[in-house]
Image 1 (cartoon, helix red, strand yellow):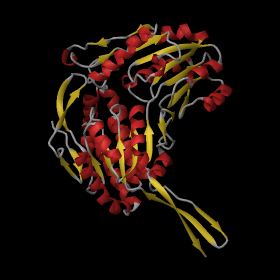
Image 2 (tube, helix red, strand yellow):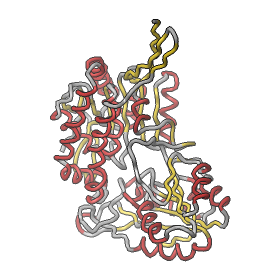
Image 3 (cartoon, one colour):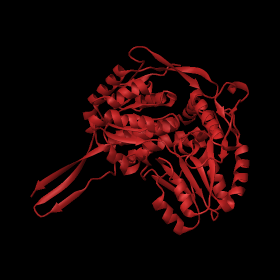
Length: 478
């Protein structure tokens, strides 16, 4: 299979005819090629988007909304095939792609198709004058998405940008390009005008860098590593582009003895290992009140050992492959570092060989460690895999200090039935999102993003539409 770029409404290879190999994580085998696009391909896509911008920006919101609704309908129509593609390309269980990734991709388009029809501006009247605010699209936007939730996060960026009247050049991760290519095909079928949505494939170092640097790109929405986000901020600093950077996390779950124990245990198991721990919102540090620490360790580790690691296509599989051989080695290296820091490996800690078609795949056993202190590499560095640490605490103040003791601040979950504690911790936790007695409950109307090294800016709801527009004040004399 050869995956193609979508530029100006046409599917095409890279300008220079170069290709990159695409590997199925569960088997370790090459199954497709993607364009190794460079600055010339990016320039072609940006120029197409720039040419399409005026017509799209002047299109009424109802027409833009209808285009997004058609895309959502096509995603729903092809949901089963898209889920299979996502599982194959990423290594995640097919059941997860079917239940979460693909439905959410369709919902992203539907939500912003509706939102743009209700997006309003302000007016300020005073004697003799009327001020009102226009919200105008920016122009060409760059949408750069990661490999962990490929179609889910790509549509999360594209949908509000298009809804607000911008044109887009998107770059999906070169590790998981397949559903972005499928979206290209669906965009053509949906009748999206040529140049409004362009999707270019290639490496971050070549295609991604050229996209963020391009002088006609007015805004960049990026999800990925903190290191790459910092580089985007550096190279765009002199161009004054709008930036939304959603980056790494080292999220804590604070577990108090007064919580609903069974509900907590079930949810924390999911928050720790969903998508093999490869979600920026996954829990990677479990902070447990000492009075229930031993009980929790015993019960949690027993549940982790029951998780079924296997072929992502099988319905009983709960843990699929991690995304690549390189990422598998990184995770195993982090586990080795934990051992060197004196950690006790309570379960997991090694690569898993799955027999049959997946015997060469990239699998890591779900891993739980205890022992390293809050300043250890294990509790500071983002592992982004099926690895969690457990730390005990005695006092509320100690739990808060442990939770905030990293450079990251994306999300936290709080497990307690003490409402005074809920209020105090919700204010004091250094995180962009705080879940109380739940995890991964997402209302698309709410702002999404992190603090500290976890991000810059907010996406979701009105925040996304404000990001993708600029305000203009108009003052009229009577």
